[in-house]
Image (cartoon, rainbow, N blue to C red; front, side, top):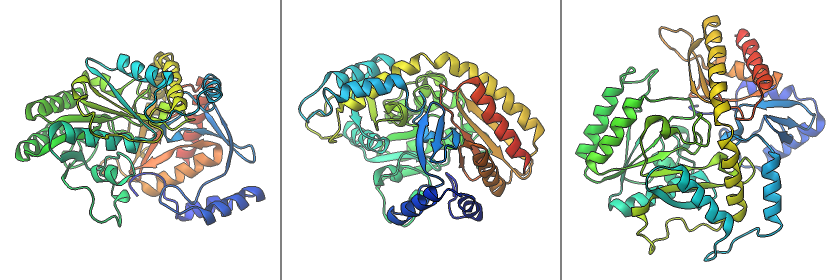
Length: 437
């Protein structure tokens, strides 16, 4: 498994056996009976009854500090300000029929334009991130007249057929047969392991070579920072990629669906690199963890395809989704300074854990996005996959939820609104659980 926890292991079975609440057991059985099983989803771990702030809570009133949150919980769960705004909107205009617009949608598009640099002023809204990626790919073809796309192995851009075509996670491609043609996947600039052995210049040479050999390439799609196992390219890397895209006339599509909106300490991760995308994909946390909302933002000069349906979605200009996104952004703007302060604090704590536990091969992160890579040996960097799973279940027992990515990376993504006390509680659970392995 390259992303997410493995849900058919002995550890999962033992976890399910440990559940004693009869109502929960019955509901989990029904969930497994009526939902189509799929990797990383069903069967499920527990049955939730409520969520608030940094916590999710099950039917037996057990709380978990949620350091997973599907990357939607930047402003915490059930944020009162957001709930009030959505409730008010729900009582007036709950849906916007196609060919009509509404004030929340217009204000959201205007806000996104104000936050993005230069002429990135044009938006299309969509209910989910996969659809945003689909719009970006269609727009890139329309702009360039070229159908080929370069992307990275191990990347994730969504679960729909077009999104998995440009994505690099093998688990999503199994048994899918032919995918969208014209995709050129290349090894990512993995700093901590991989074929380049930490040498990003080799990756840049690879990109330059592929761009020069394939005249039909119209777009390069990538995660600015890879969310799943927290891979953070250098400033030099993205500067040079932007220059290569300019050189060969290739559009740069940055997928920031899980990592934008304050997660890294800035509104958008590309701000760290002083570059601009040609198309920016947003989603997940954009709806504040309540309403599904995503978007693409692109340049004014690409507004020339009024005769093409690029994103013809039923909930395209949802007043509920728009008010959720607009409110979420406004709240996040007030959280960025605290995210930076928490980044410094988390880094210090994790560095102490790295000194304490030989199993930790590497820690890396920005803002409130952190990865702890577990290894059997720091020299060989052999993945400690079973140990990572054990740590995850030990943490779950004690009330801390997160996901394991790439088999051995503990990915920590708490709510940006988390208190220092809650943060300390989570890090102490992690410390205790690491000690068990």
